[in-house]
Image (cartoon, rainbow, N blue to C red; front, side, top):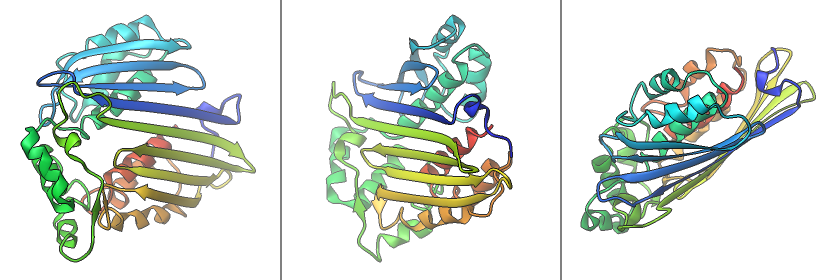
Length: 292
């Protein structure tokens, strides 16, 4: 297996992402994402309509460090009107082109789209129902984000049934469903990625911590064989502890897999889908993307 291009001339690559959601408009939310890696840094801010439309009203990219092509910043502003739904990555890549920083800008946009699935704009009276407990939060989730049913185990029929058989602890709060006017940092997320080469192995690490999630993933790949030889992760915080916990055990099944170009597609069936965990899949797929 060849070493990733990101490790050309260095033994380690790191990237940090900080994102947050502000409620500054009557009918829209403001999503800000700042990404910093070893080569450059940028910040994007997007005002977008909430679920189920997710349409971008305004988009801005600010270069912070390193080389960011002016065409990338200009192209980002042209994203206005684009819905953050399927096909977003392809459309953004077409608009932003291949200038310096374009890949990082696309990744920042993807993170914004993910943030948009974390805060809703329900009437405050409805949002207050979250205080009633886990099942109330689950019901609000499916009302606020109509794409959730069968998107992962928690929102499948099997996941729903577990609420009646065990104690489930929810991390949702009313502000996530109906934030107060002018409320800042309604939701805040930090992610860190590390890719390094040592002792004949590639070591990959990805963490994500926010209001409702806590994930820390570690993968090790043998460079000689290209096989995954270690797959560990911990989840100190989950939206529904006791339900979201169920599909987490699938991560260890990556051991023995070949880290080839097709692995990201194969894990859609093992880590994602109606029996899996959408966050676990996204975090793992993002890690594997660094190998390209």
